[in-house]
Length: 230
Ligand code: 5RP
Image 1 (cartoon, rainbow, N blue to C red):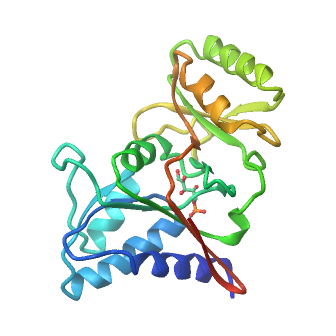
Image 2: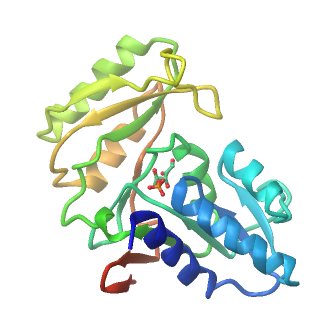
């Protein structure tokens, strides 16, 4: 079975947890896109849900699939968010942001009673850090922000390389919020909660891709079937 089929299987498994009347956070990325498509089929069959997309790409996908949408300003809380991840560790801490949507993804996940992570099982790691950590930054004062980020890495015993993410046009990739992303190759992150706290305190850092304590369930599809971690 190829990777894309595994992603769709994980998405289908998460769909089993969707009930009539739910307010849903809709993640971003190739796995979350499968979920949106499958959800659209259920909506066409009469399921009544409403979704909050975590990116303009997901908004367009959801509209194409006939999933009714709202905004976080119009609902109090969300019942469930289903999203992909770039890495998942045994504590269900995550690295996200490979698709550049980490800011809205984190806001939506934090406003949800429950977050199910869906992925193929290559995303499962004993310790976070193999995937470059995305850090969303304000372009203004970037050199100062970079130095502050480097100081935080050093304080955490990490000495990674940082690179501004490029877009398809060769210029800096611009997020839906109009910010840039620094991808930091860190290697093993031994204390992800501490790193998350320190990065979050830097002026100029809008958000980072460490999702600590937000996921309640991970559904990882592999050749042996789907493993569910809670
Ligand atoms: C986007 C994300 C994605 O969920 C993450 O990159 C995983 O994507 P995919 O399902 O395509 O592997 O965090 O910002």
